[in-house]
Length: 60
Image (cartoon, rainbow, N blue to C red; front, side, top):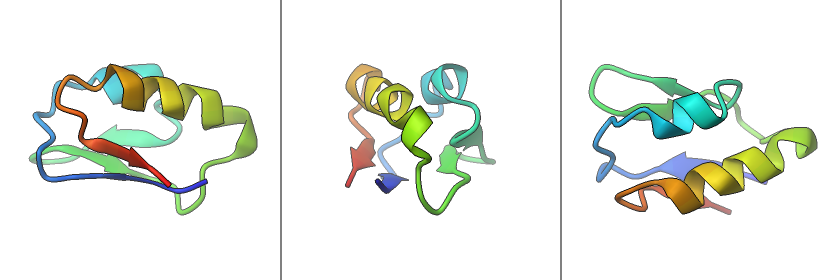
């Protein structure tokens, strides 16, 4: 599974709180810090995407 964050991110930090092993807070918005999401973190990444207030997290 891959994940990316679009520029619509508002840097609320919810994804970082939900799954800090995949997301980190950058200068302007959240960033994905892994190339491929580990299988054991897939559910947390999906949760972060579902809870993102601006739907900026795209799971592929």
